[in-house]
Image (cartoon, rainbow, N blue to C red; front, side):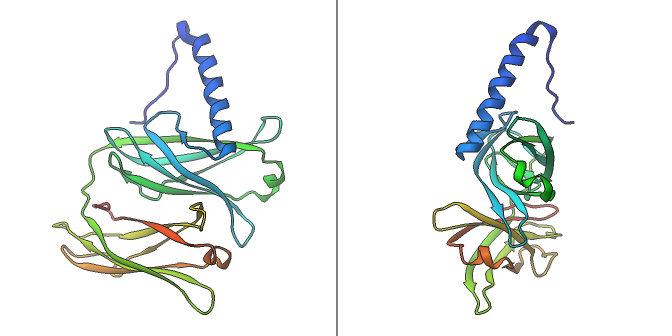
Length: 235
């Protein structure tokens, strides 16, 4: 059941002040690109960036960590967009790439701002998170090896192998790459399914993640990998 924020009448004035301060702090943190915590204090934002892809669409890409002591899933991140007068001009949502996060685990997210008509009006935004509490997800996927290469046509590939260390099939197995530029800033987010897609117990699968945006391909200097399936997450 989603957690709900309730305010009693006695504390109404106090909570209004606190919400105003929180909103102002989040706006400043986002503008300065500093670390930011979510409204519910179960997550910490480790990195974030505003990205424009080769088709001139804007993205808000980030990395969050579950700092609570419970496993959560169905994590929805919403970007609330404001103009220079602090007026709301839109909101855009996306589920985290790793859909179930055990305590201490991390997941990237990629929010596409698909309405190009508001781009020139955007002055600030804040991020809101919602989630469900769930049971611990077994950490039975392991990245065995990985390497990258930039081919002659300008496409960047991240290749590797992973192993299912569990007793059950790892179905719908995907690997996500969060890429970084030479300044350790986020460059992009890309993912692919493993081959085979359904990995038998104690078996090894390969993966190849193509970065098809050539503007990003030439920026990449490093990356982090995240894997998940229907039953397992990354060890």
